[in-house]
Image 1 (cartoon, rainbow, N blue to C red):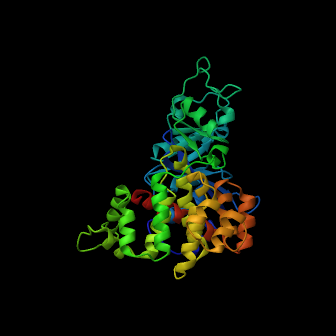
Image 2: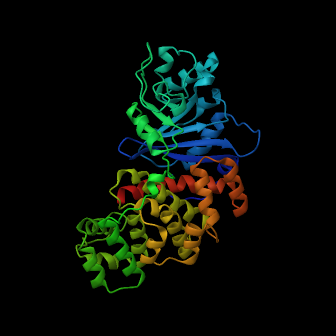
Length: 411
């Protein structure tokens, strides 16, 4: 989805019956190399044809350069998938257990011949024919089903006669140690990242780049003189370069090149400067284990903005964005919220949602956390509490993913 748009009636009629969750695919360098979408029927005991589910995503497909795995968890792989016009980066997951059925094997092979990309979900309980295995780009293996893992999680040699011919992605990780052990066993990526691992909550001193961004946020909030902002920017040449790159980008379409920091701040404006700095604060860490947290925080901010406010409600949009973007800031920076929020004053509604889990923004934050955990029961509960249509929630999620991919390249 390249630009914001409202739901069409036909599109919404299907998106309104689905519960869509997402997780990033994190590689060994802690970078997000793709996305996984899991899809369940939002209506109990309703199973849609897989082709109809896939077609419903096409108008709002997340614009992304990396692979997007699609897992329709309660839809059967059948001939309805043949008419699906798959985006180039789409990879459809096929449950290994369904491949016991020769008809499903035939559907998978025809989809592959038609140019569709496939991933194998789960470990087959019987050997699959080489011609069938060749249809899959990846295999997804739950960490508890990995035959190369010992009881204590350490890698084992491959069982006799067993070799991996398909790159594998690990699922079900609970800790950073789980992820690291999976990479030692040869995993290409992990589905998701353990955001609540205890090591993320260890107190650490602020890094120099984070301290400069916090100082700039304080100056902008206080409407400080341009000369003071300029002097602070000059303490971090890399940050100053990013600002000049931003205002000279195609998005601004300026007829002349901006080379002065003060001029760049004037062109951006204090409101946009505050938003840009908020993003940078959430992405200023050099600790690689925080990269997935940064990835999540940006998507949280954009989702809250899109789901909780209209385009005309600029101040509300900004507060919701900051609520999501700052919700993992204690884990990213290693500083407790109390210390961080002494350095930069935020509205009471934002602080209430992040720190006290109450107030008008708290349920929006709980909703995106439920989506990240792939918890359809909690998602339904929060959507009902907010009186938000399911289709609008799904559209906001996919729209946030597309917008975040653009932001990632600008930071």
